[in-house]
Image (cartoon, rainbow, N blue to C red; front, side):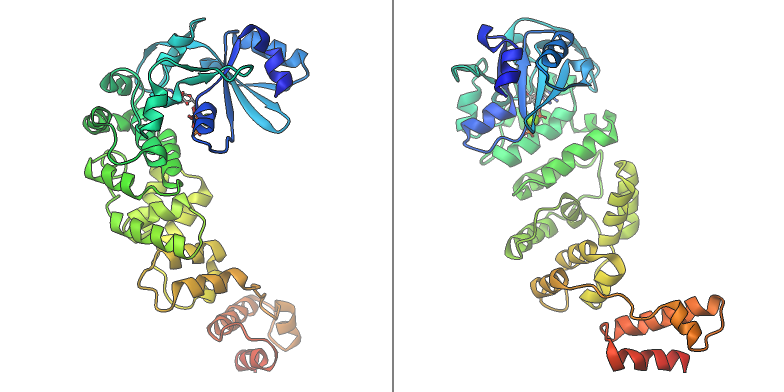
Length: 380
Ligand code: ATP
Ligand code: MG
């Protein structure tokens, strides 16, 4: 990091930490990714980093961002910029040498705090520190206009509120987000999905999601979302059962238990094949034996389905622990062995194998004589 800062002109005050890193340090939280703002053009940034032997990838060159990796830390280096014009989806940017201009194009006051890496001096152009202390997400400038510039800020507003906010969100921001909720339809589905999953992956998104439902924020993009009670039940259960937060599981809790709905939403939000399969599978209400379900669908899907079924016939926590610790067995017989035992080669082998597997699952995966009895029944 030292080398990187030196290369970017730390000594001359040409580079500052900004955004999430500064905010999280002020809150005493761990910092994952570091954002830096610099006065140099992206080309100069790349040149200087490469001269210093630091790998620089132009990840977002349209908006002036170069990603550097320094001793395993990912640092996003963005040239000071002002947003000239936007259509609500993307901005046309111009570079500037004015720090306050760069601050003014950012979304919320506490995301526009800068720190000088040499001295730690804080630059706070819009009262971000005060808002951070008050745990208040506040748009820089006029909320209505800022959302018109970039509609994704609606979802970012709620995400940051769920993460840092206390009590009700800032009234002006909430009002603008509510009235402009239909703007979300103009955004690319990927960006919407990405923000929503980030929100749902937070430690405690319950209150915020409830507020969003009340305010009709999901309606334009996810009208199926309704069941906040089920989400709350799930969050409470995750805590009890020490289940790691899972955005997809939490999304599923908000939806009607119907795999078709899952497939539909996954297609709409451009989920990956794997996400689509997972969402559809966990929206199929859980039934029957936990281990049988884990064997058929995999442990993760089985665990999520049980977590999502408050009416589960047994003790949900126990069932999940049982699945977790289970050494999933393999069917103790193969096609070749059936042929040795007199089954004629051909499609019948697979049919019999499947029948044996079914009996074996139903009998809770026995081996030894109990398994042999199952085979004998089918082969004779
Ligand atoms: P996180 O910890 O979630 O990464 P972050 O504040 O670093 O939080 P990023 O999405 O990484 O959030 O963005 C970095 C910074 O860029 C923000 O702090 C904010 O200043 C600015 N920013 C990001 N997205 C927007 C946006 N849509 N509109 C305005 N400013 C934005
Ligand atoms: Mg960040």
